[in-house]
Length: 407
Ligand SMILES: *Cc1c(COP(=O)(O)O)cnc(C)c1O
Image 1 (cartoon, rainbow, N blue to C red):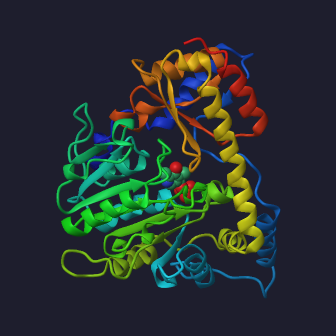
Image 2 (image 1 turned 30 degrees about the vertical axis):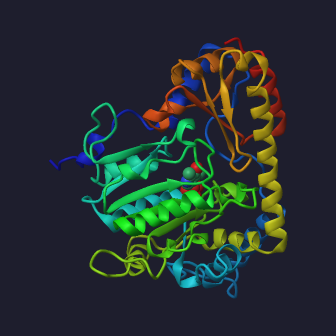
């Protein structure tokens, strides 16, 4: 018999979202009349921009004609799309040779592990989007879970006490640092000063940053950086992963990209970009050409306008949720809601309570599904994440019910 990959046997508990779904199913089965609203998983809900959808539809139909048909494309992505991303999002910061098109940011984060192998040291913000840790465990870069997290992973608490920015002095030399801004789940968005500290630290200590910018489009404060390459020195220490999922509603369409700078080097002086090119050509085989046609349409004048409008809609939902969490019933229980207006999540602390207890209480009394903060890491305990992805009418109804919650 073949031995099981120890990375899988080391993984503890279920992935967070399946457990949330299980509790929701169980509750619904016992309460068939409950009209459950989800403010849980970060899944987009609003229809695609017709402009972007039409570009994909036209492309797909043309595939049925001799002139319009194409098979495999460049594994690194359509060159027009690579150039357009560089021009629109990274002017004077990156060029097309550094942009690689993918089927999404999560998939790239998992593939990135193959660049660094099983010996690399890993640091993550705590709380964090689960794939950074789970992917590292599967890749063998982390050991067993000793109850306070996995061996071999440094957890960097990001809490209201440190304004959600970690203590970098806890990171060892030559560590792979996952950093997400605007953050999932806390919503915290790093300032230029904070990112400069991070970049300087990485350059001085041989670290590489995997910068997850999946929510860059939610940044409305003009002083906040939308990409890590706004920070001088980032090109020698950072890979940025990014996605059309959240700004364009492409969670089902699947399209993302990563930026791997030509200046980024391994210890032996070899090019990270060259190895990433190898990963994309030998392990990946290019993103869907239909999705890439949608990506190109998303980056023209109309597409950019439509993406902004869609993100604005979700940001308004976030404001509604934040307002209700500042109501008397929450305030008198000491609940504090964090919402920056630069990300889709409202992160709320319920002092003295366990996250899963609050999750169950809100499900039971409001029929609203949330996400327990403890599922994102030890420092998320006693927090709840409220997602602003939802139809406005559902958000309003959820807010009405939350305003009656007895804490
Ligand atoms: C949603 C999300 C992603 C996933 O992006 P895909 O491109 O859909 O794979 C990546 N990072 C964070 C932090 C996310 O919340």
